[in-house]
Length: 480
Image (cartoon, rainbow, N blue to C red; front, side, top):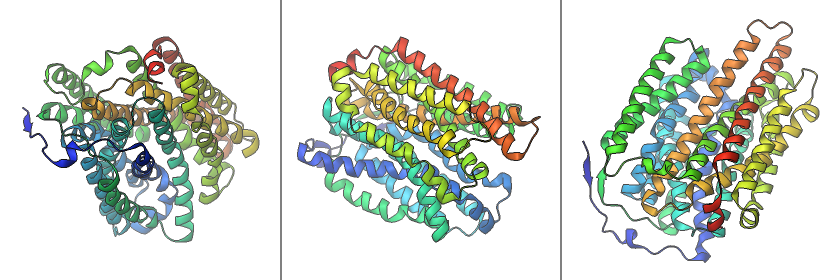
């Protein structure tokens, strides 16, 4: 069943695109909204021990401080992108930012575990409205070519930079004030972004037509089941009954989702997005690269604190070489795209990521920061900077305004699910490798982490091969 969505007649919907002089302000406001999501993906991590102590979490329940956010975010991303298409992307982004800020306030004021988990789930819902619509607004506000490539470069860097900054900010706030400020810091930022959006960012037209209620229901339920199953696997292994039931439900629901989308007049996820060879290869890349890379961050954080005995603050600063390398590289990527095209830049970045993961595969208990981690972190920063922007540009090349939200929502969904899938696989590899290992706790941790890095290298290599043989890069080169 579907319900009609009324066309917009508001002046916002008829606004002209922003002048070039204002594009810098547009980019700043939109990227700041997205940076909130990137920072929040890690800012709570280093505060977990203090949260457990203050709110009396059990060791198992504590993981849901992260999982509640992941479940809502990953499950609702596709819906968030489609809502932006129909309601208006600026309007949807503003609602998402306000929901994110409000839920951060509730989380910062939490007095028990259930209160905090509910707030984290609301944060995930807000993030699901923010992420696809920030990318869609860049697509619709910036003309295809060098300006859009520059904007995508800045936008792409915010994910990695936000994650690194989140570790540093979380360590600082937890050490100097309280874990609550890791959440409360979002409130003034969110209010400022919500006030700036209607002033500086042009609203997109609201597309009249049908809202795909059946697709929204099956897609959201299927994605939620899939994310939940991966969360169960990461904590309880592949043999967990609830994980198996989650995978079964996800398979049935997503099969139904595909059937519904193939017949819907205005689907929440147009299947024709996959008809283009370059775009299909790009989507495969944004699924596989986070699967091999994001899990590595988890183990690197453990190694820095448990093996190198770093404080939470120092562990956060340990990731700065990656952040600086990423931010430096993305400044040059738009010019490299214009000169060489997307595919050579993409393959170079992926090769660096494979090399970084392979280097970490050789990690040994006696290795220090400079000998074991510094080099791979630099390569990861450069690899991310060279990989994700060409992937985004490849996926969004030739996308019309009507489908920008759906294409962006699918991109974000696959990227987030890839990270969740990769972490569950690497944690399972780690558990298998350490189950019968002998030696000191730090030796066992390094041994299991190295095995996980090896599997991450194989996943990154798969992404490299898919990109090499599927993506041609021609449309993106023409756009450049």
